[in-house]
Length: 292
Image 1 (spheres, helix red, strand yellow):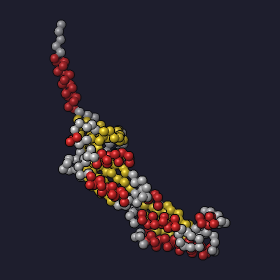
Image 2 (spheres, rainbow, N blue to C red; image 1 turned 180 degrees about the horizontal axis):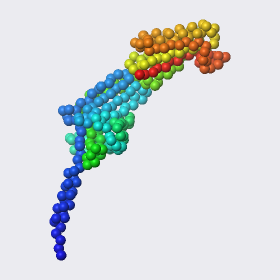
Image 3 (cartoon, helix red, strand yellow; image 1 turned 120 degrees about the vertical axis):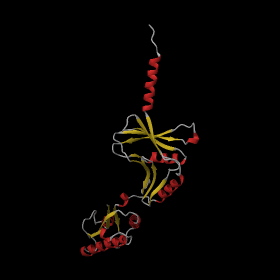
């Protein structure tokens, strides 16, 4: 008995074709005509570089004032993940460099109901690949359609000029953050209302920060003395010192209603008054700053 293999072969080919056509790669990338990179935040506290991915969302590189000025990347999705997954990130060469393989950069965690985020090291890699004309592209399994995969690319068209502006903005940012100045203890010279040189530099740093941050909610100024000079005199001296600092901060443009002052005089010593070092420590002024 002979069996024909033709129907079976046709069936397998039909099945393969059906499977092949059911899978799809949905790609989201700006064209050369629609690719835009924009600086949306340019201050000494924050810099942000945005790139719209049509019909998908936005790619965001940002950095804030700090010692290291680290860069963070955020993939702002209009439709956020429904499940936990991983997106692979590759540097895809431009079309005119045909034959060069895409390079693996990193993996990005996809968390349910959250945008995608990457840290400083990978963000820098993405920026340098864009500078070279490559297209950082994310690949992941669609959480809404198991038959589809998603590719989200960042176009390098019109990138370099905006990138240069971003680097200049980053360079001009303050080399310290809100956390660095939100709680500060300063000290005074003996028998004087003048701050020590170190404390004066600290106050100038606070003043520089306050010029740019519009989200300050309150500032508390507490002044203390050592136990020399008489209790009443020290109480009045601490009040004057606190008021002098408040007047200085108000001169920077801060609403005086946001500033509270208190002079405690000889109360609440934090060290012994029996030696010079202890008295230097007790002659202090504490500034606490809160944001909205």
